Image 1: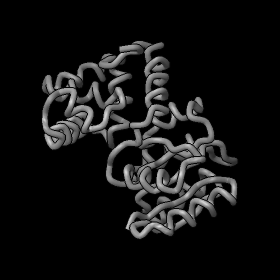
Image 2: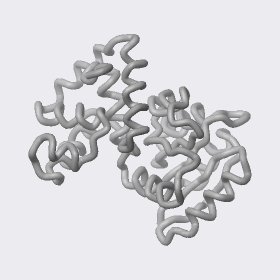
Image 3: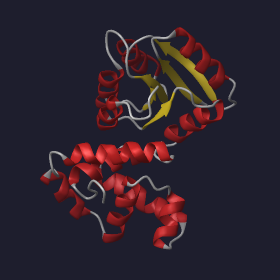
Amino acid sequence: MIRVVITDDQVMVREGFSVLLNAQPDMEVVGEAVDGREAVEQVAALAPDVVLMDIRMPRLNGLEATREICASGAAAKVLILTTYDLDEYVYQALRAGASGFLLKDASARQLADGVRTVAGGEALLAPAVTRRLIAEFSRLAGRTGPRAPLRERIGDLTERETQVLALVAQGLSNGEIAAELVVAESTVKTHVSRVLVKLGLRDRTQAAVFAYESGLVTPGG
């Protein structure tokens, strides 16, 4: 079972998502939090697999809560909930360690699939909306230029692993990367896993952030 904590200051949102997720045969909502501080506490007490995290909340917002949860070493993956597909705080949340984001008007199937995706160690970085977000993130990251220490770590990767990292950062799925490089999808999965291990990253989202901040992928590149 995938154990989920739902964090949102609106009771109707929490109850609605709870009903939808508890109806899934492989999911269980183990807790609900009204703000970021309570979310951090519930992650420590309940050890969920996934935390659905709103951004704008009292006491401790979703951005700070995400940063605390990811910095704590908890295994929980954070899935950001937002009303707007290009919420300015989403970029910061991804940098803080979130595994992806989901719009609050997502269908029941999209919600469940999103939870499964991040619980399985993947990133929610596929639809066109997300690609716009990635493009905007790259533009913002490009303002300060690449960070040299991160660029040096790229040297630990093989040429093919570097290619795969760049394509992951552009929002391509494993299947799309396989088609682009003319290799088997299982081969791409192996490359992605090696990239994450070598760079010490949590998931594909963090790989995308790394690629932008290191300068491997540049705005418009």
